Length: 287
Image 1: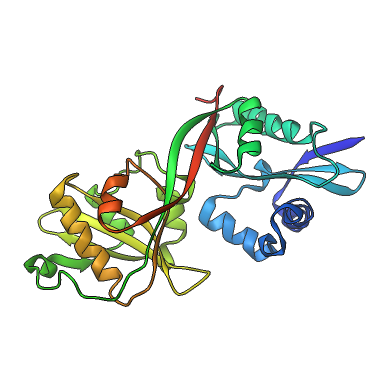
Image 2 (image 1 turned 45 degrees about the vertical axis):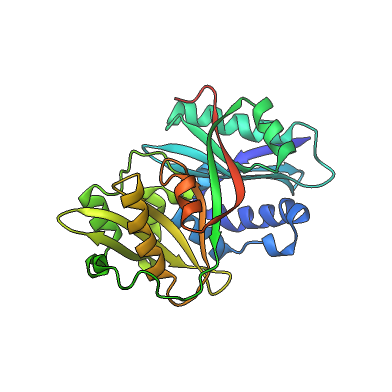
């Protein structure tokens, strides 16, 4: 008979072992994590041990749910997997409903998940488990050439370094605006030590971009981007900033951006190619 339990802060080695036993068979050895990886997830994404669950068959982990939590925001299902040979026995549904029940009692009651659009079977499972689509996010890439286009533009003199805190204080980044979990202000704060920021600023911030080095190659991830003007003016200022951060020829990626952060049409006009789509879900009973 299967057993289930929520975890404690000292269960991180168990969660890592359960993840690697249940997730890696589906996604390959490169998807394995370490205790240090999990601790990085705590800092950057809000992994919360007491929002994580393990399913057991005797002493053997057969299911894993890794949850993240932001006290005034939401709970987020980061990963959910059942070990091969144990699927279709209700374990995944039990893990999901248990987290939803706990969130409803202890809060925050909002429960979300973000799933790649191509994961059709997993998306159907979440929908049958009481989740509905709420948002769409896109992944974009740009192969920069290192050219210094736009450097003769007099507005280049207005381009200056900027920090995350300065952007928040200026109101350029609105914490209330819906973003993917990894692009939320809380997630950005967890990565503050490796963020590089640039802005076009006069008496206010007119456009900005935040990047961090990629952990997989020599490229950079654009983790926040925006312009005060949503039209041609804003697009031209963003083009200046993109030219600035791409001047060394490194490829740029924008992971999981919402159309409300910067319009997808604007990114296309800047030369970014849309590569992938992710669907944001919310549990129907969530607030």
